[in-house]
Length: 140
Image 1 (cartoon, rainbow, N blue to C red):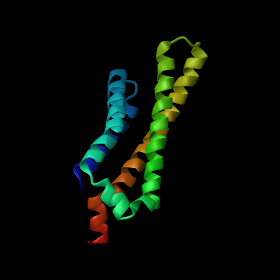
Image 2: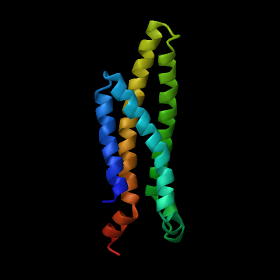
Image 3: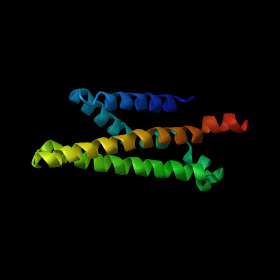
Image 4: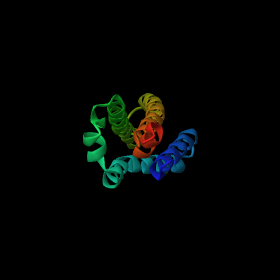
């Protein structure tokens, strides 16, 4: 396994811990914000360290179902992050009534569950598309 796959898997485990320990706000907020920043910067790292032209264009992977599923999971994760941040900002502002804040917290938790489902699937599809994994599976 590559270091990127191990790193992404470790951050996923950390995210599950932060979700479980949401009542410890300082831990929850610091981990979630850190993971959001990592998820924004990680594609830049991958772009700088992989030969995407060879893999996607020369080998024709751009037309495969797996690449498009992975791309849609990335977009879904980013959309969930945007909505999550908007709801969090509304909760923190505290300008809403108590009933509305309770509803927003439930919405925030549901979005968090969506992120907890989407992110491991994105990591899994990315691991399947990693050049080292593809070479080992195909055997060339």
